Length: 70
Image 1 (cartoon, one colour):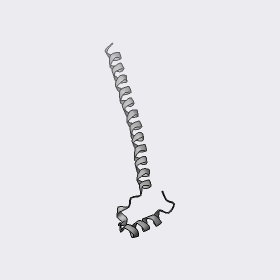
Image 2 (tube, helix red, strand yellow; image 1 turned 60 degrees about the horizontal axis):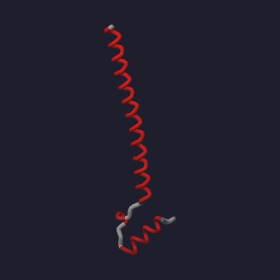
Image 3 (cartoon, helix red, strand yellow; image 1 turned 90 degrees about the horizontal axis):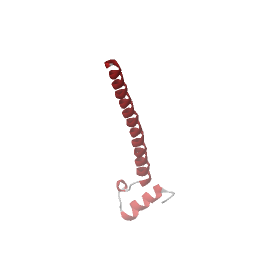
Image 4 (cartoon, one colour; image 1 turned 30 degrees about the vertical axis):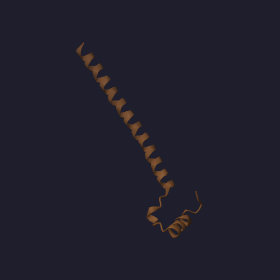
């Protein structure tokens, strides 16, 4: 870990002849993956609500059908 990522990037590029495109910012990748991970929970919650709504509608329609048949 470093407090000066640009300086480290420059030092690696100069010392080992590493192209700047080969150096990966792991903190940015971690932040992106955590945001994707959090979005999956949002999607899962939305799908759970949708599933419960469809089930409730189906139960309601079944009860109304039974009431109409009596």
